[in-house]
Length: 322
Image (cartoon, rainbow, N blue to C red; front, side, top):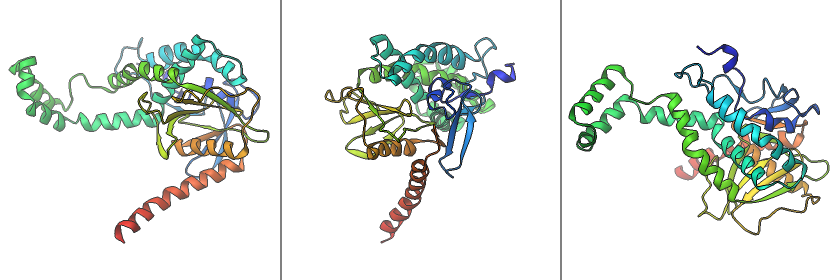
C-alpha cells in the first residue's frame, strides 16, 4: 500500500507554475500565494508547495503495484513535463526569446495543465461512471451481441454478461486505467496544437497585475466571447485562441491567426485590457483564483461573475414563461 505522504498534496496546478504569482516575494515552492474563493470572494494566503491547488490522491493509480502507483504524479508530471518546462517558462516570463525545444516543453506543460485540473478529471470519471454502469454495459452487449460473437465467440459474450451481473464491474475498466487513457489519448495531440499556434505575450501596465486560477489554461472564441472551454483546440477553427496568465506581469495568447505574433517586449497594455483578461480568468476558474497581491478588481470581478450566474437562469425562465 502507498505511504500516506505519497498521495498528499498532489498539485492540480503545479508549484512550478504558481510560484510566479507568489505574494511574499519568495518565487519558489516555499513561497506563499493569495487564494480567492470563486463562491465567496474570501481571500487567504497559502503555502504554494503544501496547500495551494492540492488534492490528496487525485493522480494515484490506486489499483497498481506500489512501484507504479505514483507514475502520473512523479514520473510523467514532476520528473518529466514540469521539469522540462521549468527553465523555458522562466525565459517566457522574463521576456527572453525561447528556442524550438523550449516551445515544445512549454506546449507540453500547457497541454498537461488543460487535462489535469480537478474539474476535468472529475468530469471524466462522472461520464465514465454513467457510461460503464453495469446495466448500461449489459444493454450494450445485448444490442451488439452478433458483432461481439464474431469478435470474441458466443461463450465469451455470455460469460461477460454473467460476470457483470455477478460482480457489478466491467472488465478492464478502472479509475487508474481511465486516468492513463485520458493523458495517453490527448496529451500528444494537444501539445502539437498549442505548439502550432502563433504566440503573443502581453504585458500588464504599471499598477496592474494578472491573476491565475485552478484552471489556468483555457480557450475562447473571439467572435463568441461567452463560448469558453477547458479544451477546444482545432486547426480548422481559426477563431479560437489559447489564454494563459504566465505571471502577474505577462499574459500569453495563442492564435491560429498568422497576424497574431509576438508583441514588442517593452510594450504594455491598458488597464481596461488587463481587466478584460482577468475577467476571462475569473470566469474560467473552477473554485479558486490566485493572485500575487490583494486586489479590489478581483473581488469586483468575482462578484460580477456570481451575479451573472444568478441572473441568467432567471432571465431564461422569464423568457420561456412569457
